[in-house]
Image (tube, rainbow, N blue to C red; front, side):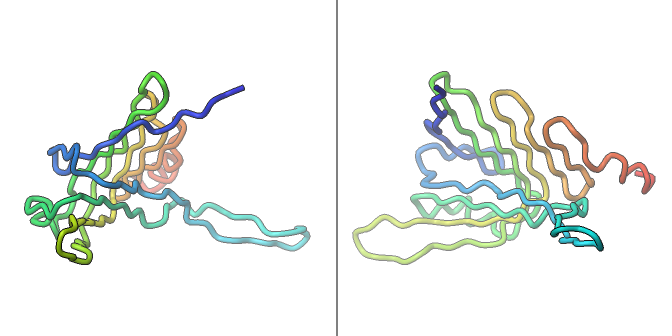
Length: 163
């Protein structure tokens, strides 16, 4: 019987600065392939054909304070954000490195006597997910790189385009 490894703790770094203790929640990017549905003559149903691209990658962070350094990064592109977590009894690392545009800041509702929450949202141009020292996924939109499980899915396309 296997027992699942649970996320024991996490933190985040924005532009190289750690925010341990201030991060309320982090939502790493959802990774989804861009596909086209196809059903040809003689087929009993439809299949998804990968189009060699990923869907828009978005992520966000919520902090338990209105941090001027974070808000001051609004509109900055190519901003590095790293999620770091520990899972399982041995505390193996989960590292989600992202770069992107901080496209939204939300100071939420204000109510006297209650702590505020600052939510910042990003659109990623680069993500790399490493779990237990194993690189699981790397996507670099601008440089046409898409690797998963050690396979470079766009190598042949880059070569065909002379890149």
